[in-house]
Amino acid sequence: MDDRAKYRIKQLSIFSENRPGRLMDIARDMKEAQVNILGFTIAEGSGYGVVRMLVDKPEKAYEKLTSEGHVVKFTDVLAVKMEDKPGGLYDLTVMLKEAGINIEYAYGYRNHPSAVLILKVEEVDRAIDCILASGRTLYDTSHFK
Image (cartoon, rainbow, N blue to C red):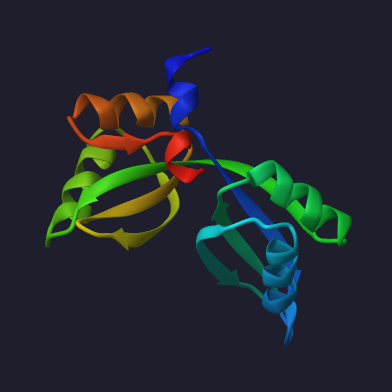
């Protein structure tokens, strides 16, 4: 297996009608499946939304959500350990821009004493190489269990 594979974090993208109770349905499904939600974001569109989630058991979550009728897709994302101080995001984005790597979307959460930036990029393997070569830390899949 390619060493870079361990840095590809499986994110669930759940496509959902934007109406009251839909997030509750997803949360209930995760509770019933005993899947812990580690991070999530919701992007809103015209009448629909995309719930992006990191969970401790992605395959189990996928099975439960699809069995309940949700449209779900796996997406590989990267989890970059960030210093929790001003300028950290700027420095990372400068490095990626100079490498010609486009960030499709990102979200983050604080994980004291640091923070975690979740990145969806076009060229995952090249981004892994660039981030590691810069001396930054990528969390691997074991961090999300």
